[in-house]
Length: 73
Image (cartoon, rainbow, N blue to C red; front, side, top):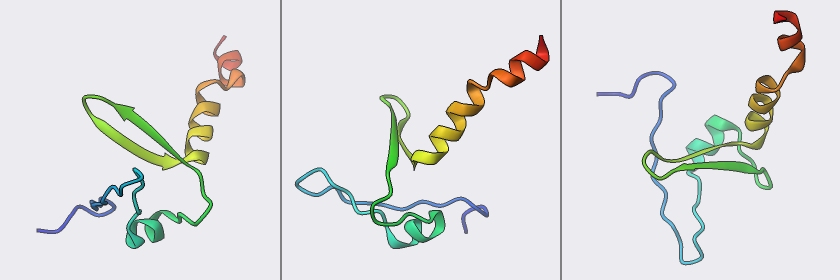
């Protein structure tokens, strides 16, 4: 049984210093390069999500975009 299109699962091992290596296929799929900054979001019940820093900036901008609120007023 294959994964649904666009869905992936990988494993990573945590080293002695608490570091993980992102699997090569994951880095290729998501365009992660050395020096990139990633954002880790954690929920004690649901786990950890890792996303590019830029994605959070876009989400934050959309959530606080004043021009959309002005249009609705």
